[in-house]
Image 1 (cartoon, rainbow, N blue to C red):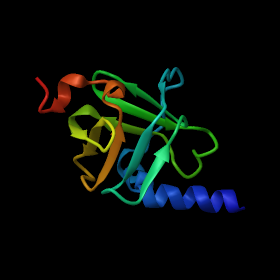
Image 2 (image 1 turned 30 degrees about the horizontal axis):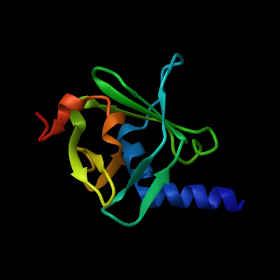
Image 3 (image 1 turned 90 degrees about the horizontal axis):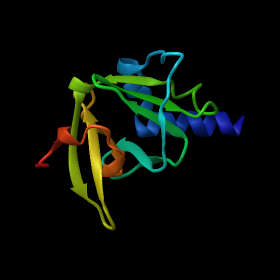
Length: 128
């Protein structure tokens, strides 16, 4: 019971539930995503929810597919975000650079992930 409360709370705090209201969708049966090792999601700097190895992503030509591990999916359904809704920028963190990704529907919620994991490097603002 505690597990369900914690996962539900993290989905709410990080903003996944808000994103799911707009972008929640079924993924194709042949989904072949890449496991992302370090991704955070949240409003501003704190609180941020860390998805360490429990999130799969597929950067298709026109959309981003995100699928959490099955143990989290009851509170965090898969997301399908159109590429046209995503704004990305490279940022400098304390120890390394990262890609900050926001959606046009919910610009207050951001994903942070390593630049090398972002599937559309040509879309990162400020990059040549």
